[in-house]
Image 1 (cartoon, helix red, strand yellow):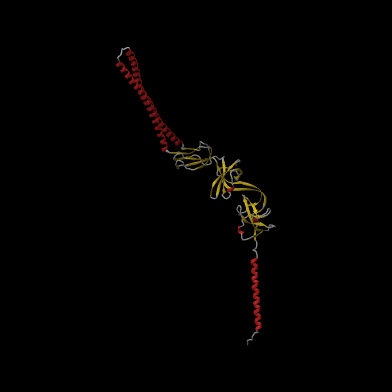
Image 2: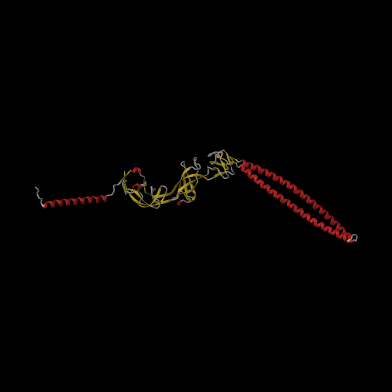
Length: 418
């Protein structure tokens, strides 16, 4: 049979359950609160995989660096003077040449024929000049003979008039005869003047005709000279002493006037052409010292030109070489160049971190005392160089910092070094 429980016992059990549940909920809440306030465990990082540097105080040299090539200062581009076909390529790149070295032999039958035609045209014109000169001289002699005849008749008339005047004074010649003598003398005087003028005009006309024919001859001589030079230029010469760097045509190729055939450089006169990032070139100035690394020696130099335009994120900077070139130096050789911007006498600096631009604030891990852990600190950077950067705030001389890329640890403010 059922036995009825006492109400006090039931209430006691319920009270215990409520109390125990309350304590359990409180314990869970406190545990969650404690876990939420715990700092994440420090990340373990291998020390050997890190680049660690010390913060220093003292002089710092600001530099910029960029890759580049050695470029010949004296470059001669050999172009075709006329159209033609490449018959033979006589010299290949890398061969030393002198001014008279024949690089390419061209052919152009039409040009050769036009040169022959120009020569015959000049010969014909010269013959015409000689014929014209003889004919004009003959005409001039005929004119002089006619003028001489009139002059003689004039002189004779003058004598006759003088005689008639003398006889007329003595009454031996009638006045009519004297007047006729005077009229004839005046007529011959006019004819003599006209003949002299005609002779002068004839001389000037002959001179003008000869000058005109001579001008045509000179024109044909110039054409013939041009044609001969064009034929001669079909033997393409180097034109200077140096080394053939490029041959840009092949045998059998047809070329037009102005086509680049070859490139000759003077290998003893080279300059460095560096590609400097446009973000770093703002402090580069003409005359600044530079050092060129040919991977077989270092050559001192100075900045001689800065390109005013940027191309693909870089600016071209020319460096004139002041030192002796190594034996391996040649045009288009790959090099590295370093330009000295300025020397800072007393600054706090460290090695250049993997991230961080000039005049920016970055997070850098600084080693704690003992060197077993590192904590992230905010560091304000100043002026930068190739391998160093000025520290404005956040670090002191003697601090050790991690320069390696730590972007994968952005979630951690502290790391453990192993």
